[in-house]
Every structure is written in structure tokens, then in C-alpha cells.
Length: 300
Image 1 (spheres, rainbow, N blue to C red):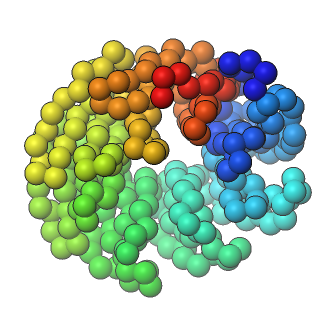
Image 2: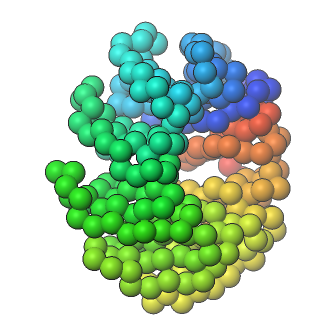
Image 3: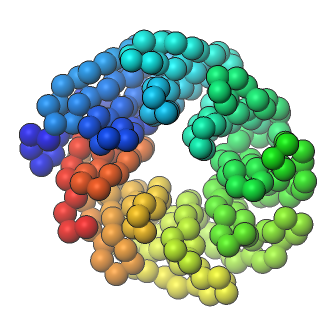
């Protein structure tokens, strides 16, 4: 990078990612445009325009993947469109897991694309699909259901939920954030629940669950379900990620934070509310209501 930080474009950016070689970023959002930028030179390498806002962009193997809010899916090879789908549904989730692309919709439809083919396409619920985890089983979270499938897509178990928000896998237990509590499930039953309100996100960090929400602290839960609070200098945690045993999160007062429980760096976002972010060893990128910024890490 030519400077310690770079800012660009002034339109809302909903999705942003860093290439595997850490030389490029890809982003898209409300201006209906996919953009690829070279980090060091700040050169715009590629753009493509759509008829709808972009929900998700990322690098997928040796391709570029772009998904619009209305269910159009595009693949690019060497900046040329090679394949596309149009599912004509409002998208609620896109997640790359290994060599599969998982897409969920507001209607409750869920599908998996692998090797350029749709290998699973089914209406799993009557509410929007929120998240998916694929381990030895396939775990699907919708607004009102937790669904567990085997690797042949045969349903094993389903649990009714109350306004679920997020989930993660924690020592072979599923931790599900619902409206007023966090529930814990194994393959057959609910094994515990802890009452919390206004939790928005959850991740696993080492042997702990970390939860953030509409409060000025992090909730940390160990495997014995003991809970402690880590006070924060920000108001409300909106998005949590973990990489290389470090914690990264955004806040409702437009901050980006990184570090561990005892040493958190706080960065004031110049893009306003952050809708997405990505990190690598040297820098982080934020996409938000006022565009994109690239910033070098300090004290990590």
C-alpha cells in the first residue's frame, strides 16, 4: 500500500474480501458493481455491473464469485463470466465451505453448488435461512428451526426455535442464539440454555464461546457453561470473527476492534456502519455505508 490507509468509493459496500495472496480486494454493494482492486498500487483491476445490489463477492478456488440480492450467481475466470445461475429468490445467506457454495434464501430455500452443479436444492423451512455448518453432519439454521442432516442430505433431527439469530459448533455441541437465551443442542436433544437478551452474534475462540450484542461487553462461556463478562470501550457488537486465535469485531458505534480478551485495539471506522470486513496478517479491510477502507494493523 502506498499509505498506511486507503479510502475509496462513497456508496454502501455490503461484501468485501481479500485474495488468498493478499494482493487484491474484491467488493460490491449498493452501486450494483463488482470491483477488484490491487492493494499496493490502488489500481482498479476489474469491474462489472449488475441490475441489482450485490449481496456477496469472494474468491472461490481460481474463480471470482458474485451473488446479487435477487439470486443471480455469477462465476468469473480471468475476469470473464464463465457460468451463471438465476434462482429468482431473495438471498439471505452465502457461505463457502471447502469446495461447496451454500446459498440460503428468505423463502426458506437452501441449495449447494459443487463442481458447477446444484447438488442439493430444497425448501427446508418457511422462514429465511440464516447459517449453515458442514462438519460430519450438515447443520442448518433458519429463523424458527435448527435442522440436522447426514452427509447424504437425509434429515436426522429438527428443533423448533424462537427467533434465532446465529449459531456455532462448540465441542460437538451446537450453541444457538435465540431471542432471549442461548440454547445448546446435541444430535438428539437440548442439553442446556442460558438466559441472555439482545445477543447478536457468536463465535468459538479456543475453548470458549464468545457472544456479542446490544451491550458494552463480551460474554464468554466455557465448556462447563460458566459465564463471564469482558468490558468493552465500544457500544454493541454487531459482527464477530476469529482468525489465528485472535478476535475481530465491529460495533454499533462504528468501531472495529481486534486482539484478545486482555488487549483489544479499537479503530474508529471512517466508513460509518460496517457491513462486512476481512483480515489478513498485515491489514484489514472494512466495507460500510460510506465505502471501503484498507488499514494496516497496529500492535497485533
